[in-house]
Length: 67
Image (tube, rainbow, N blue to C red; front, side, top):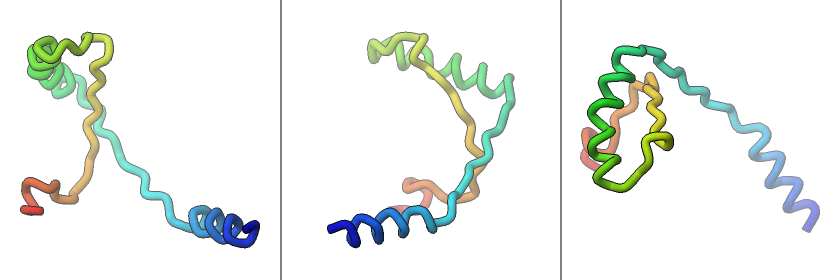
């Protein structure tokens, strides 16, 4: 059992980390916040729970990729 756990942890420790770059654009974040706030209010989500992070990623999402 210990060998299996050791192999499991060793596998995850050797996998490369994929860091994401975050775009810090205040104007875009404010615009998105203004667009999202009415939807969140309609869904009974408090405003203090809204956090907007813009991630710079070239991968296609599922809608664009057609998956």
